[in-house]
Amino acid sequence: MNDVFTLDDFERLARERVPHATYEFMAGGAADEVTLRWNREAFEKIRLRPRMLTGVSAVDTNITILGDILSYPILLAPVAYQRLMHPEGEIAAARGAAQAGATFVMSTAATCAIEEIAATGVRLWLQIYLQSDRSVTRDLLQRAEAAGVRALCLTVDTPVLGTRNRQARAKFSLPADLPTPHLDAVGRNELSLVSMKRQPATWKDVDWLRSITKLPVLLKGILDDRDAQLGVEHGAAGIIVSNHGARNLDTVPATIDALPAIAERVKGVPILLDGGIRRGTDVVKALALGANAVLIGRPYVYALAAGGSDGVARAIAILREELETAMMLLGRASVRDLDRSILWSGGL
Image (cartoon, rainbow, N blue to C red; front, side, top):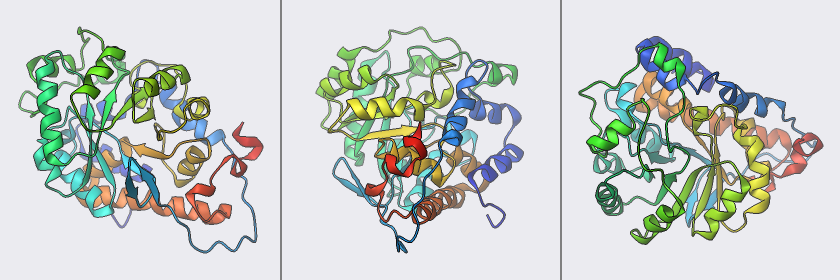
Protein backbone atom coordinates (compact mmCIF):
# COMPACT_ATOMS: atom_id res chain seq x y z
CA MET A 1 0.00 0.00 0.00
CA ASN A 2 2.99 2.33 0.42
CA ASP A 3 3.36 2.47 -3.37
CA VAL A 4 -0.29 3.29 -4.03
CA PHE A 5 -1.17 6.95 -4.56
CA THR A 6 -4.14 6.93 -6.94
CA LEU A 7 -7.07 4.67 -7.72
CA ASP A 8 -5.46 3.84 -11.07
CA ASP A 9 -2.47 2.42 -9.19
CA PHE A 10 -4.76 -0.30 -7.83
CA GLU A 11 -5.80 -1.30 -11.33
CA ARG A 12 -2.19 -1.84 -12.34
CA LEU A 13 -1.59 -3.99 -9.26
CA ALA A 14 -4.79 -5.99 -9.78
CA ARG A 15 -3.88 -6.72 -13.37
CA GLU A 16 -0.65 -8.34 -12.15
CA ARG A 17 -2.41 -10.44 -9.51
CA VAL A 18 -5.52 -11.91 -11.12
CA PRO A 19 -5.87 -14.23 -14.13
CA HIS A 20 -6.03 -12.45 -17.47
CA ALA A 21 -9.60 -13.55 -18.18
CA THR A 22 -10.77 -12.28 -14.77
CA TYR A 23 -9.15 -8.91 -15.35
CA GLU A 24 -10.77 -8.62 -18.78
CA PHE A 25 -14.15 -9.45 -17.24
CA MET A 26 -13.81 -6.72 -14.62
CA ALA A 27 -12.20 -4.07 -16.82
CA GLY A 28 -14.11 -4.60 -20.04
CA GLY A 29 -17.12 -2.74 -21.37
CA ALA A 30 -19.66 -3.39 -24.09
CA ALA A 31 -18.90 -3.75 -27.79
CA ASP A 32 -16.32 -1.15 -28.90
CA GLU A 33 -16.17 0.31 -25.38
CA VAL A 34 -17.05 3.80 -26.59
CA THR A 35 -19.15 4.57 -23.53
CA LEU A 36 -16.46 3.12 -21.29
CA ARG A 37 -14.09 5.72 -22.71
CA TRP A 38 -16.69 8.50 -22.55
CA ASN A 39 -17.33 7.84 -18.85
CA ARG A 40 -13.80 9.10 -18.16
CA GLU A 41 -13.45 11.64 -20.93
CA ALA A 42 -16.64 13.46 -19.96
CA PHE A 43 -15.26 14.19 -16.50
CA GLU A 44 -11.94 15.32 -17.96
CA LYS A 45 -13.66 17.88 -20.19
CA ILE A 46 -15.40 19.62 -17.27
CA ARG A 47 -13.27 22.50 -16.01
CA LEU A 48 -13.26 23.77 -12.44
CA ARG A 49 -13.51 27.42 -11.33
CA PRO A 50 -11.77 28.00 -7.97
CA ARG A 51 -12.16 31.14 -5.86
CA MET A 52 -9.27 32.58 -3.88
CA LEU A 53 -8.75 34.05 -0.40
CA THR A 54 -11.84 32.37 1.00
CA GLY A 55 -10.21 31.32 4.25
CA VAL A 56 -11.36 27.71 3.94
CA SER A 57 -9.04 25.55 6.03
CA ALA A 58 -11.40 22.65 6.83
CA VAL A 59 -14.31 21.11 4.99
CA ASP A 60 -17.58 19.38 5.88
CA THR A 61 -18.34 16.38 3.67
CA ASN A 62 -21.27 15.00 5.68
CA ILE A 63 -24.46 14.20 3.80
CA THR A 64 -27.80 12.67 4.74
CA ILE A 65 -29.35 10.03 2.48
CA LEU A 66 -32.57 8.21 3.33
CA GLY A 67 -32.25 9.35 6.94
CA ASP A 68 -28.67 8.10 7.38
CA ILE A 69 -25.82 10.51 8.00
CA LEU A 70 -22.79 9.60 5.87
CA SER A 71 -19.37 11.08 6.57
CA TYR A 72 -18.76 11.66 2.86
CA PRO A 73 -20.70 11.25 -0.40
CA ILE A 74 -18.94 8.13 -1.66
CA LEU A 75 -20.50 4.64 -1.62
CA LEU A 76 -19.26 1.30 -2.95
CA ALA A 77 -21.31 0.13 -5.93
CA PRO A 78 -22.54 -3.44 -6.36
CA VAL A 79 -20.01 -5.62 -8.20
CA ALA A 80 -20.69 -9.31 -8.86
CA TYR A 81 -18.49 -12.33 -8.16
CA GLN A 82 -15.90 -10.69 -5.91
CA ARG A 83 -14.27 -13.99 -4.92
CA LEU A 84 -12.79 -13.87 -8.40
CA MET A 85 -10.69 -10.96 -7.13
CA HIS A 86 -9.95 -12.11 -3.56
CA PRO A 87 -10.50 -15.38 -1.63
CA GLU A 88 -12.80 -13.70 0.90
CA GLY A 89 -14.74 -11.80 -1.75
CA GLU A 90 -17.45 -9.47 -0.54
CA ILE A 91 -16.66 -10.17 3.11
CA ALA A 92 -13.20 -8.64 2.69
CA ALA A 93 -14.59 -5.73 0.67
CA ALA A 94 -17.28 -5.04 3.26
CA ARG A 95 -14.70 -5.21 6.05
CA GLY A 96 -12.64 -2.57 4.26
CA ALA A 97 -15.73 -0.42 3.74
CA ALA A 98 -16.59 -0.71 7.43
CA GLN A 99 -13.04 0.27 8.35
CA ALA A 100 -13.41 3.40 6.20
CA GLY A 101 -16.97 4.16 7.34
CA ALA A 102 -18.41 3.69 3.85
CA THR A 103 -21.73 2.23 2.72
CA PHE A 104 -21.35 -1.08 0.87
CA VAL A 105 -23.90 -2.04 -1.78
CA MET A 106 -23.74 -5.81 -2.22
CA SER A 107 -24.84 -7.51 -5.44
CA THR A 108 -27.48 -10.19 -5.77
CA ALA A 109 -24.67 -12.00 -7.61
CA ALA A 110 -22.44 -11.90 -4.54
CA THR A 111 -20.28 -14.89 -3.74
CA CYS A 112 -20.86 -14.60 0.02
CA ALA A 113 -24.09 -14.86 2.00
CA ILE A 114 -25.77 -11.64 3.03
CA GLU A 115 -25.57 -12.59 6.71
CA GLU A 116 -21.79 -13.03 6.47
CA ILE A 117 -21.41 -9.65 4.82
CA ALA A 118 -23.64 -7.94 7.37
CA ALA A 119 -21.60 -9.49 10.19
CA THR A 120 -18.68 -7.21 9.24
CA GLY A 121 -20.66 -4.32 10.73
CA VAL A 122 -20.72 -2.37 7.46
CA ARG A 123 -23.61 -0.08 6.57
CA LEU A 124 -25.24 -2.31 3.97
CA TRP A 125 -27.46 -1.79 0.94
CA LEU A 126 -28.55 -4.57 -1.43
CA GLN A 127 -28.71 -4.49 -5.21
CA ILE A 128 -31.56 -6.55 -6.65
CA TYR A 129 -31.75 -8.50 -9.89
CA LEU A 130 -35.32 -9.69 -10.21
CA GLN A 131 -35.12 -13.42 -10.85
CA SER A 132 -37.55 -15.52 -12.82
CA ASP A 133 -38.52 -17.33 -9.63
CA ARG A 134 -39.87 -14.42 -7.62
CA SER A 135 -39.96 -16.51 -4.46
CA VAL A 136 -36.15 -16.42 -4.50
CA THR A 137 -36.26 -12.61 -4.60
CA ARG A 138 -38.86 -12.53 -1.83
CA ASP A 139 -36.70 -14.77 0.35
CA LEU A 140 -33.66 -12.57 -0.23
CA LEU A 141 -35.59 -9.48 0.79
CA GLN A 142 -36.69 -11.14 4.02
CA ARG A 143 -33.09 -12.07 4.78
CA ALA A 144 -31.97 -8.54 3.90
CA GLU A 145 -34.40 -6.96 6.32
CA ALA A 146 -33.35 -9.40 9.05
CA ALA A 147 -29.66 -8.63 8.36
CA GLY A 148 -30.14 -4.89 8.79
CA VAL A 149 -29.91 -3.81 5.15
CA ARG A 150 -30.77 -0.11 4.88
CA ALA A 151 -31.92 0.18 1.26
CA LEU A 152 -32.48 -1.73 -1.97
CA CYS A 153 -31.14 -0.82 -5.41
CA LEU A 154 -33.18 -2.38 -8.20
CA THR A 155 -31.15 -2.74 -11.39
CA VAL A 156 -33.43 -1.73 -14.26
CA ASP A 157 -31.04 -1.54 -17.21
CA THR A 158 -30.35 -5.23 -17.90
CA PRO A 159 -33.18 -7.00 -19.72
CA VAL A 160 -30.30 -8.75 -21.50
CA LEU A 161 -26.55 -8.61 -21.04
CA GLY A 162 -24.62 -6.32 -23.34
CA THR A 163 -22.31 -7.45 -26.14
CA ARG A 164 -19.08 -8.04 -24.22
CA ASN A 165 -16.52 -8.94 -26.86
CA ARG A 166 -13.51 -8.30 -24.65
CA GLN A 167 -14.36 -10.93 -22.09
CA ALA A 168 -15.47 -13.33 -24.83
CA ARG A 169 -12.06 -13.03 -26.49
CA ALA A 170 -10.45 -13.76 -23.11
CA LYS A 171 -12.66 -16.87 -22.84
CA PHE A 172 -13.94 -15.82 -19.44
CA SER A 173 -16.41 -18.14 -17.73
CA LEU A 174 -17.63 -18.53 -14.18
CA PRO A 175 -15.83 -21.29 -12.32
CA ALA A 176 -18.21 -24.16 -11.60
CA ASP A 177 -17.35 -24.05 -7.89
CA LEU A 178 -17.82 -20.29 -7.49
CA PRO A 179 -20.61 -19.84 -4.90
CA THR A 180 -23.55 -17.60 -5.74
CA PRO A 181 -25.79 -18.11 -2.70
CA HIS A 182 -28.48 -15.64 -3.76
CA LEU A 183 -28.97 -16.87 -7.31
CA ASP A 184 -31.00 -19.96 -8.05
CA ALA A 185 -29.96 -22.18 -10.96
CA VAL A 186 -32.03 -20.15 -13.41
CA GLY A 187 -30.71 -16.88 -12.04
CA ARG A 188 -27.10 -18.03 -12.26
CA ASN A 189 -27.64 -19.06 -15.87
CA GLU A 190 -29.29 -15.72 -16.64
CA LEU A 191 -26.22 -13.90 -15.37
CA SER A 192 -23.72 -16.39 -16.77
CA LEU A 193 -22.26 -13.99 -19.32
CA VAL A 194 -24.09 -15.50 -22.25
CA SER A 195 -27.26 -14.24 -23.87
CA MET A 196 -30.03 -14.09 -21.31
CA LYS A 197 -33.55 -15.18 -22.15
CA ARG A 198 -35.89 -14.04 -19.42
CA GLN A 199 -38.97 -11.92 -19.00
CA PRO A 200 -37.82 -8.29 -18.76
CA ALA A 201 -38.92 -6.27 -15.76
CA THR A 202 -41.54 -3.53 -16.10
CA TRP A 203 -42.92 -0.73 -13.96
CA LYS A 204 -45.38 -3.28 -12.53
CA ASP A 205 -42.39 -5.14 -11.10
CA VAL A 206 -41.21 -1.96 -9.40
CA ASP A 207 -44.64 -1.72 -7.78
CA TRP A 208 -44.48 -5.39 -6.79
CA LEU A 209 -41.05 -5.01 -5.21
CA ARG A 210 -42.17 -2.01 -3.18
CA SER A 211 -45.25 -3.92 -2.04
CA ILE A 212 -43.27 -6.76 -0.42
CA THR A 213 -40.65 -4.78 1.51
CA LYS A 214 -40.46 -1.99 4.04
CA LEU A 215 -37.06 -0.92 2.73
CA PRO A 216 -36.65 2.09 0.44
CA VAL A 217 -36.13 1.13 -3.21
CA LEU A 218 -33.76 3.08 -5.46
CA LEU A 219 -33.73 2.51 -9.22
CA LYS A 220 -30.26 1.85 -10.62
CA GLY A 221 -29.53 2.28 -14.32
CA ILE A 222 -31.51 5.40 -15.20
CA LEU A 223 -30.19 7.65 -18.00
CA ASP A 224 -33.33 9.33 -19.36
CA ASP A 225 -34.95 12.06 -17.25
CA ARG A 226 -38.40 10.79 -18.27
CA ASP A 227 -37.63 7.41 -16.68
CA ALA A 228 -36.37 9.19 -13.58
CA GLN A 229 -39.69 11.02 -13.30
CA LEU A 230 -41.64 7.80 -13.82
CA GLY A 231 -39.53 6.19 -11.12
CA VAL A 232 -40.52 8.85 -8.61
CA GLU A 233 -44.17 8.47 -9.65
CA HIS A 234 -43.87 4.74 -8.91
CA GLY A 235 -42.51 5.43 -5.44
CA ALA A 236 -38.77 5.13 -5.96
CA ALA A 237 -36.89 6.45 -2.95
CA GLY A 238 -33.95 7.51 -5.11
CA ILE A 239 -32.44 7.41 -8.58
CA ILE A 240 -29.00 6.04 -9.47
CA VAL A 241 -27.75 7.48 -12.75
CA SER A 242 -25.78 4.61 -14.24
CA ASN A 243 -24.90 2.98 -17.55
CA HIS A 244 -23.91 -0.28 -15.84
CA GLY A 245 -20.25 0.59 -15.95
CA ALA A 246 -20.56 0.90 -19.75
CA ARG A 247 -21.06 -2.89 -19.89
CA ASN A 248 -24.50 -3.09 -21.53
CA LEU A 249 -25.46 -0.74 -24.38
CA ASP A 250 -22.48 0.92 -26.03
CA THR A 251 -22.64 4.56 -27.20
CA VAL A 252 -25.10 5.64 -24.52
CA PRO A 253 -23.91 8.86 -22.88
CA ALA A 254 -21.49 9.10 -20.03
CA THR A 255 -23.39 9.23 -16.77
CA ILE A 256 -22.10 12.71 -15.91
CA ASP A 257 -23.59 13.93 -19.21
CA ALA A 258 -26.97 12.35 -18.40
CA LEU A 259 -27.02 13.71 -14.84
CA PRO A 260 -28.01 17.39 -15.29
CA ALA A 261 -31.35 16.73 -17.02
CA ILE A 262 -32.29 14.15 -14.39
CA ALA A 263 -31.32 16.45 -11.52
CA GLU A 264 -33.36 19.25 -13.09
CA ARG A 265 -36.45 17.10 -13.53
CA VAL A 266 -36.47 15.02 -10.34
CA LYS A 267 -36.87 16.71 -6.98
CA GLY A 268 -37.32 15.43 -3.46
CA VAL A 269 -35.37 12.15 -3.71
CA PRO A 270 -31.62 11.55 -3.60
CA ILE A 271 -29.81 11.23 -6.91
CA LEU A 272 -26.65 9.14 -7.02
CA LEU A 273 -24.23 8.57 -9.88
CA ASP A 274 -21.72 5.91 -10.84
CA GLY A 275 -19.47 5.46 -13.86
CA GLY A 276 -16.00 6.87 -14.34
CA ILE A 277 -15.29 8.24 -10.86
CA ARG A 278 -11.53 8.06 -10.32
CA ARG A 279 -10.58 11.36 -8.66
CA GLY A 280 -11.85 13.66 -5.95
CA THR A 281 -12.35 16.28 -8.63
CA ASP A 282 -14.81 13.89 -10.32
CA VAL A 283 -16.80 13.78 -7.10
CA VAL A 284 -17.09 17.57 -6.82
CA LYS A 285 -18.15 17.79 -10.48
CA ALA A 286 -20.90 15.22 -9.95
CA LEU A 287 -22.18 17.04 -6.87
CA ALA A 288 -22.06 20.36 -8.69
CA LEU A 289 -24.23 18.97 -11.48
CA GLY A 290 -26.91 17.66 -9.14
CA ALA A 291 -25.84 14.37 -7.58
CA ASN A 292 -26.15 13.89 -3.83
CA ALA A 293 -23.48 11.18 -3.80
CA VAL A 294 -21.43 8.94 -6.08
CA LEU A 295 -20.56 5.26 -6.18
CA ILE A 296 -17.32 3.59 -7.24
CA GLY A 297 -17.16 0.05 -8.58
CA ARG A 298 -14.07 -1.13 -10.45
CA PRO A 299 -11.63 0.94 -8.34
CA TYR A 300 -12.47 -0.79 -5.09
CA VAL A 301 -12.50 -4.30 -6.54
CA TYR A 302 -9.07 -3.63 -8.03
CA ALA A 303 -8.04 -2.50 -4.54
CA LEU A 304 -9.58 -5.68 -3.15
CA ALA A 305 -7.43 -7.77 -5.49
CA ALA A 306 -4.32 -5.76 -4.66
CA GLY A 307 -4.66 -5.55 -0.89
CA GLY A 308 -7.79 -7.17 0.50
CA SER A 309 -9.68 -5.23 3.15
CA ASP A 310 -6.81 -2.80 3.69
CA GLY A 311 -6.71 -2.11 -0.02
CA VAL A 312 -10.41 -1.25 -0.10
CA ALA A 313 -10.05 1.05 2.91
CA ARG A 314 -7.03 2.71 1.29
CA ALA A 315 -8.91 3.28 -1.98
CA ILE A 316 -11.73 5.01 -0.14
CA ALA A 317 -9.26 7.09 1.88
CA ILE A 318 -7.49 8.24 -1.30
CA LEU A 319 -10.73 9.39 -2.91
CA ARG A 320 -11.94 11.02 0.29
CA GLU A 321 -8.66 12.90 0.75
CA GLU A 322 -8.77 14.07 -2.85
CA LEU A 323 -12.34 15.28 -2.39
CA GLU A 324 -11.39 17.32 0.67
CA THR A 325 -8.33 18.76 -1.09
CA ALA A 326 -10.40 19.75 -4.12
CA MET A 327 -12.98 21.46 -1.93
CA MET A 328 -10.32 23.51 -0.13
CA LEU A 329 -8.68 24.51 -3.40
CA LEU A 330 -12.08 25.51 -4.77
CA GLY A 331 -12.75 27.60 -1.67
CA ARG A 332 -15.86 25.66 -0.64
CA ALA A 333 -16.23 24.63 2.99
CA SER A 334 -19.20 22.25 2.60
CA VAL A 335 -20.45 19.80 0.03
CA ARG A 336 -23.66 21.83 0.13
CA ASP A 337 -21.70 24.70 -1.43
CA LEU A 338 -20.78 22.65 -4.49
CA ASP A 339 -22.97 23.90 -7.31
CA ARG A 340 -22.55 24.99 -10.93
CA SER A 341 -20.66 28.09 -9.83
CA ILE A 342 -17.57 25.89 -9.28
CA LEU A 343 -17.64 24.90 -12.96
CA TRP A 344 -16.19 27.00 -15.75
CA SER A 345 -19.07 28.10 -18.02
CA GLY A 346 -21.50 26.18 -15.80
CA GLY A 347 -19.91 22.87 -16.77
CA LEU A 348 -20.92 23.17 -20.43
